[in-house]
Image 1 (spheres, helix red, strand yellow):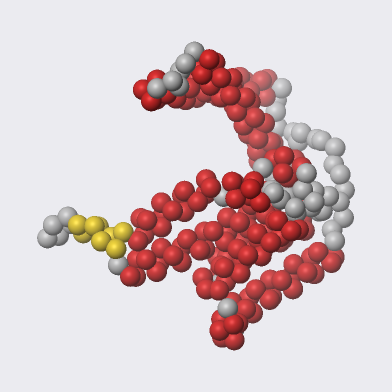
Image 2 (image 1 turned 90 degrees about the vertical axis):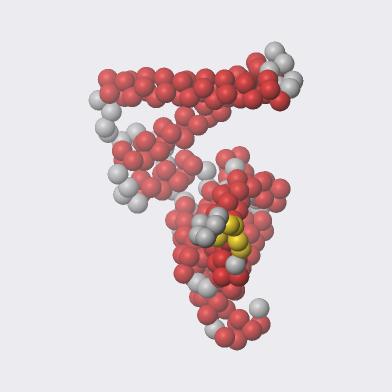
Amino acid sequence: MDNAAWSSAWRDRAVSDKALLSLGLVICALLLPVWPGSVIVTAVALGCSIFGARTPVRLLFGALRAPAVFVALGAVSIAVTVTTEPHFALGVGQAGLVRAGEVTLHAVAGTTSVLLLAMSTPMVDILDGLRRWRVPSVCVDIAALMYRMLFILLDSVGTIRQSQAARLGYSSPRRAMASTGSLTASVLLKSWDRAYRLDAGLAGREFGTETRTLRTDRPSSRWFVLVSLVGFVAIVALSTAPIGRELL
């Protein structure tokens, strides 16, 4: 996702423009009726990501797999009803299925809208945008440190797993389970140790002032903002007007 953001066709657009589009779609996904509102928002978000930002389709749907698991679990918990009297039983009712479908469509629309921003804007640009929007510098710096720590932890996971695989740690299901547990414990200890040392180092330097970096000025595009606002109006009109519902 980070590589896709750096190579995105919208890389040089202002963060405020892309945030307006993404957050506007999220609001539409939350407030508009499921049919056809969430379906339209999902189609618009996917279209902007694929045809506008030029995000690879395979990478985009690959990024959707992890949120899809949580959405599916939530939908199942809504659709299935549990009764304990007079005896324990599991059931699926029509009302539960309808509600589960509504929640799923809302969640998919919101997720694709957020991914539109995440896969077209590098994290450094988002952090710089937060500073411009007067978000407290301490919050921005903590987010930047967490972002950098992720890559350190990912590198540690890759190194440890490669070492385990070289010692046939994943040659059988039993060994794979043991190696996975050892890998998890090792990464947790390393992350805790790195966080402790980082906290001690920042405290020793009296950390509390803004970490200044070079900023690239990207002017906002009036056409992009105008098209986004017109798109929001069109989505609302199609989602709420009776004629729009009949056409869809």
